[in-house]
Image (cartoon, rainbow, N blue to C red; front, top):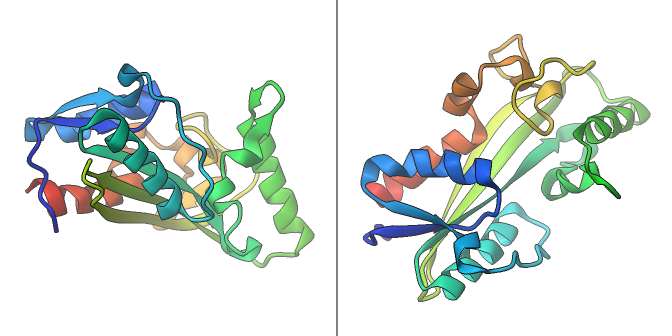
Length: 202
């Protein structure tokens, strides 16, 4: 496992919220974080059919374009009765001509479960894959998971994406009803980050 020894880490995202969340997790280790947007890099096309494939595209694109080690993630929800869909296309299910509509995406998810007569509980899991890439082409991969089930109707206004229909194992509330700090401690992203920190930063 390659240890992180640079003073700067580029976060391969143009999403301000994700940049803030990741920077807060890395800050205790004395590492300065910078957004890939600061370097004027455009986002590469995510052409792979796996989370790790797309995270690798983003991480290596940023590392080569900036000359600094770079961290990228790819994440989504995988529904068992839908053969793992939407998976890497989680955000795509929300795309509309005027932007992303996750209420549409959640409605589609439930409609497809109904169409196949999926039994209860309707099992699913959120997955997050982190790739830390260096300019020399090497990388380390960390995967996190949060198992749970899809519920209906939508519940809660916290979080984002599919959170209002995802009830994590061990809880009677959805991610959409959960305090974001509590969610951030148990989520798929938190799971992946614990592995990243253990593997490369400590």
